[in-house]
Image (cartoon, rainbow, N blue to C red; front, side, top):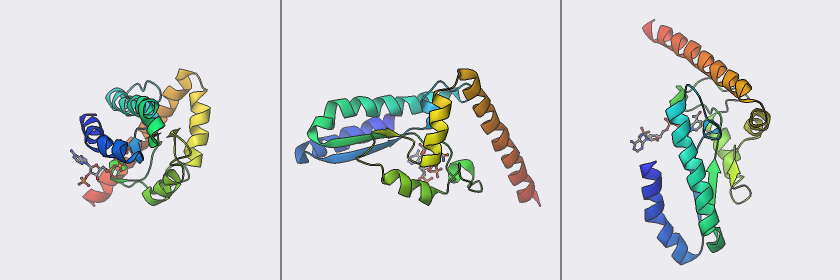
Length: 153
Ligand SMILES: NC(=O)c1ccc[n+]([C@@H]2O[C@H](COP(=O)([O-])OP(=O)(O)OC[C@H]3O[C@@H](n4cnc5c(N)ncnc54)[C@H](OP(=O)(O)O)[C@@H]3O)[C@@H](O)[C@H]2O)c1
């Protein structure tokens, strides 16, 4: 949170002077709603989301695009490069898709399958979102256990 605020403080004056700029802050789908069992992660991601949306209100009129990017899972180091699926794209696929939304969407999941999942979950009761988090954690723990076994062999 601090690095996001500090980076903004460093870069915004130059953008203001040039009257143009793009800020992309990586939040998370888990920052869009309260996220039990990922409470701290979700809360920090909600900071990124709220911070970006407020900045856009303040600086959009100076031609500075501020985007809040809220992905679901992407196959990166953070998830031990889990095997990609439609809902868990490789990083380059995700980035290509997300960059194509810059200037067109100020708050986006950045990737069509994530947007569809988000549209469903955002409209669902909190117990359904909780079920999704539990499923996510279950699959993550199974994957980690498998990875540990492979590393031991
Ligand atoms: N992957 C997902 O499923 C997912 C979903 C939603 C949101 N996100 C968010 O996306 C962002 C990027 O994550 P990622 O998935 O790309 O993970 P990643 O592959 O692990 O990349 C994390 C990056 O952050 C850098 N980093 C870590 N600690 C740092 C520190 N103290 N100071 C400076 N740089 C530091 C790492 O640098 P080094 O390479 O030098 O270690 C690395 O480049 C995170 O904010 C994450 O919460 C990820």
